[in-house]
Structure formats: C-alpha cells, structure tokens
Length: 469
Image (cartoon, rainbow, N blue to C red; front, side):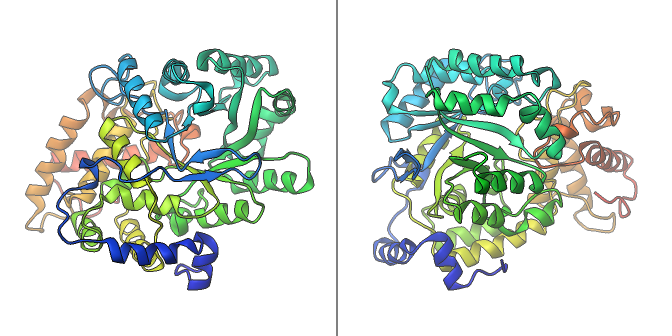
C-alpha cells in the first residue's frame, strides 16, 4: 500500500464510522478545557468489539500483564523485587470496574511470575467478568518435548486458577523461521494436542502472536485457508510508526498494514500489541508533542497512539502493559469511548511517523525478552538512555558544534545515572545469547559495541565525527 492512504482505502481499512466521529468531535471540542486526559475519570462507557467467531464482547482496551508493579519501584530497576500483589489487585479491580475484561499474560512474563499474580487478582471476580489470555511460551529447547509443553499449559491453568483459557496463543512465532516453529509446535505434536484441548473446551480460542520471519506468518495463514488449522485470532504489532515503516526500521520486521490486511480479508480478529512501542511513542521530541497539542490540546501523546491502534474495525482489543494506576486510568479514558482517528489525523500521524523514523533510534521496546544477560548487562536501560538522548537533542555530533560540551556532559552523566558501571555496554563480550530472544530482531552485541565506542570517545573528549552509532 502507498505511504499516503487515499480516502477510499482509509475508509476501507479504518471504517466509515470515523466520518461521523469527526463531525461529533468538531461540535464537542471546547477551548475552555484546561484539564488533561490523565487527570479525569472516564466520561463515557468502554468501547467493545465483538469476536465474530463466538460473540465474545471484548473491551477494546486489553490489560497486558507483562510489566506488573513490583515492591519498591519498577521491575527494570529492581529485577529481583517481588510483585506488588496488592497493587496488582487494585489495578485489576479498577480495570474491571471500568469495563476492561481482557487480560493477557504468559508463563514467560515477569520472570515467570505473571500468571500466578494475574490468577490471584482475577480469581477474586466472577469468571464471566473477564477473558484471560495466555501463551504456549516454549522458547527453550528444554520445553520442546511434548510432555514439557503439556506441563506448561497445565501449569498455566493452575496458576491462573481457571478450568479453561479463553484465548491461547502460540507465543511469538516467526523467530527462528519455520525450523524453530516446527521444533516448538509440529515435530512434538503439541499443536495438534492444543487443538484437542480446544475441542474439549479447555481452550476457547486458539491463535498465535507474530514476531520475525513473515514466511512463518504467511504459512500459518495458508494452513488456515486450506482448513488444516483454524485461527480464531492473531496478535500482531500495530502502531502508527510500524504501519508503513517497520520493514524500513528493521528489514526483519513486517509492516503492520500488511499483517492487519491479511488478517482482515480472512475475517480473523486482530489483537494488538505494542501500540506505544514500549513507550517510545509516548516519549517523543517536544516539536512533535507541539503538533499533537495544537490539534487536540486535551489529549496526551499516548492517547493518539492508542486511538490509532483501536480505530481499525477488525481490531478486537489493544493491549497495554499498564504498570502504574495513572496509565491505566488514562488508557481507560481514551477508550471510554474510543474517538476514531479521522482521515486528516491519519495523514498527520503518517508524517509524524516519518519524523520519528528519521531520528534513527535503536528500535528497542524494553520488552526485557533479552534479559537477564549472563554478564549482567542492563540491555534495555542502555538502549533507553541512548534513545532518550536522541529524542532530547543531547546526542553529541561533532566537537565543532557549540552544543558539544553540553551534550557530551548530558550523555555521560545520564549514562552513569541510568546504568550502573558494571552493567554498561563496555562489559558486553558479544556472546550473542540475547539475539534470538529479541522480537525486534536487533543485533544487540553490534549495538552494544557502537554505544561503547561512543562512550569511550566521549570520555576521552575525542573526535566522534566518524563514530557511526
């Protein structure tokens, strides 16, 4: 598809409802509003989408249980801290009270602790008040034997305290291509076993989440067309940056417009992950913030990304990993109800996507799949600091720049504050154990080396004009 979506294609993809919504927005927008979205309670009811396969009425906002609150702060800063179960309970209560009914977890999330915490929080509510999604996260070869994968599923039921899973996903297919997919799901017979569990009612919807080799995505959809396997839903990465530019950012990734289009024409509901790209689309340069505020001053930057992800009509739910209550409240408000993106707003977002693409940041979503590093390196924190310096205009360019010394100090001081010395890029030995786990297909040792070269040159106050980072 073209970078600029014409009106016909826009309405075909995003739905005719956006026309009426834009007229309503124009009539209701007021210049006297001084409060922000994050400070207000929802003004309406949650938007729902109906699963065409079984009539499930699913909240457009889904709760991703991947970044749960921990005692003493964030998991990134305190990787060994206990999950703050009391806070998880409070946030789940608020979510259900305000219409959220889709909760997504995995045996791999929160270092294996997410399912249990999710089960404790949800079990306090009637079973018909929520849909729970979890995954067959058999990434390690140790879990490839059928017995081990079966045990993983049984443990999911136990930790979640349920007799059936509403939505079960083959987790992150595409990484490692078809050979790895066959090892994880075909050679051991586990996919056929999962189909049997669906027939027994222990799984209500069977699907997969996709990262990586598009040939695997296409193969699974071909099986769907042939009737070999039926996919009730598919989880994909979709946001306004990845809509047209995912492949340009990283040649191993696939544009969301293709993924959504292939699912849509088959009538397969899409579950959306990474609407904010791990927070990157909520932390954009000030000049981009100004563009958003000029058009809708009452909305947060994040709200624009969530509105975009929720606008396509065949999106079933949009997942957000909401660690903090304020994020949950803001996202609930954004979808209560959803105000669809208009054609003009879509054009603006596509232009902003180009602006963000041209920043040339490292495409890390801070998903932590690469962690823990066997050598103790804090990979997400290093990439986060690097990207923040680019976003804030503190990336040193050359010594002749009048801003060089200011930028140099900001980068180095911020680096030491963000990442302890023993966990910095200089300790990377290039073992590559992290690479197979990265959904964004980043060559992590290569990026670590480039960051380390930059840091060493800055420490020496040396010439960095030729350092390509």
